[in-house]
Image (tube, rainbow, N blue to C red):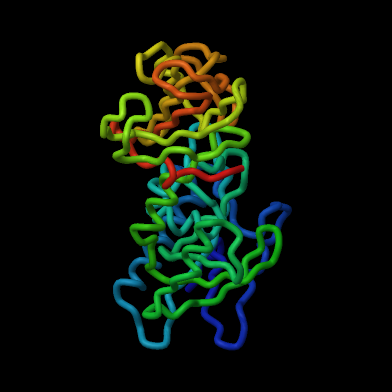
Length: 306
């Protein structure tokens, strides 16, 4: 028997089934969970439905699809996608795809999230985000999708892939999204890896990339972060280092000026300095590095222009 709070969405072979709105004046057509706490009766009902869905996945019955129930929750305070998923005992992959969240850093506080009870990937008909393009480009042929209709607030058809999760490539892209280009415009003149030093002629490992741009061009923070270093180096000249989430940091070298406060917070795209030719340089350009836990990575694998 389906509990009165649950809006079960069942498999329908002829067309997707649309969940009906509960009675009352709630803006959401799905039961709203006030708090992700066992003292809340709606959350207890949600947790029971999650357990029932997992039980159905573990012991499937022929011709009987696993139950899919949707609830709503409005994140607040320190809520993040990962903390909400952990509290709900549902993979973040499921919440992210159902709500079309593009990266783990997308803000969720103040928005209404749909919380599914069934661990699954929830895919649209057409991709809107990079993650959706990746998922729709390589579907798992072993999983038969269940079509459901979701209202949030628009009606849309969603293809539910029970018990599916992000593969390694998609997970890495979701957890470490691309960073913005650190200049309004620039030309790549030197790549990451071994090269002849243009000043000494020695073969050295180039830990970043060089982007040529006119002297005085604004240099932009590639992502939100905190300024951890600012100084002068014989090689980098005037430089700035910014620490980001997930153990990453970015370095900006050969600057002509700096517009930051040490230990200050910066936003993605904020001006942190200007292009110059300080240090070991043959002309105005930006030396740009990305490091993960102190290890240099090829910035071209992260960059996207905005």
